[in-house]
Image 1 (cartoon, helix red, strand yellow):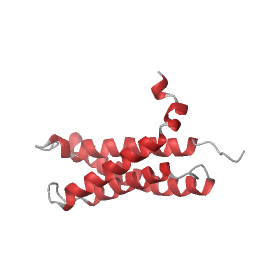
Image 2 (cartoon, rainbow, N blue to C red):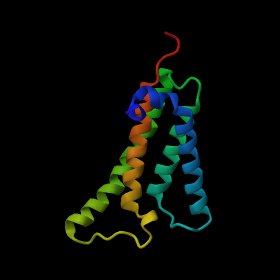
Image 3 (cartoon, rainbow, N blue to C red):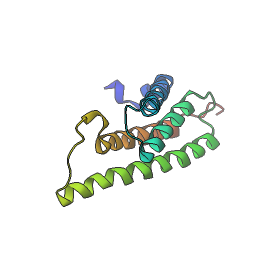
Length: 133
């Protein structure tokens, strides 16, 4: 189970960061091209994912100030993702929930994915070892 070991993930942080940035760029391109609807929640979440991906590429990402800034940005993204995801749970509770016709752009699923990705990247950034010790 080495793929879920934190040291393995720290070793793959550049690839994780590049994947997050690519995901951010693709999502923005889909919106700008008009292939998906404009969603302020989604904009925040994809931007935060891209920023945290960029942080993972920094050679000094282990520094406490970078971790602090990542936490501030990440928690903002988490709050937005939680709000959007909770709106889906409200619809489920009231019996009005239905998935989007195109399941790949369903806001309930995408906000859940964004929440998972943002929390995971924050945890990874916080675990980066200080190379000056």
